[in-house]
Length: 109
Image (tube, rainbow, N blue to C red):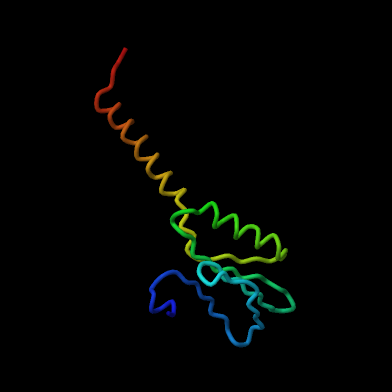
């Protein structure tokens, strides 16, 4: 089945036909790496769709592939599914509630 039929995962890069491009790597699901040449400068474009779970394995695999290819110019884009901000927001809200409770019932000693 095609990705459109299965409606699961997938990354794509649209590259103008006037730009020289070559697919360098894909895992056929979540990572696509394409080398473009513009003004005699090679750049590695990386499109990713990170999973919500098992991110450590995914990012380790991605990192190893980037190191192996050894490009000076890299542009990475996509859905990183980074949960750091979510955790920061949760912690921030907890702190905010503590402050609100403190100022609603201040204890003056």
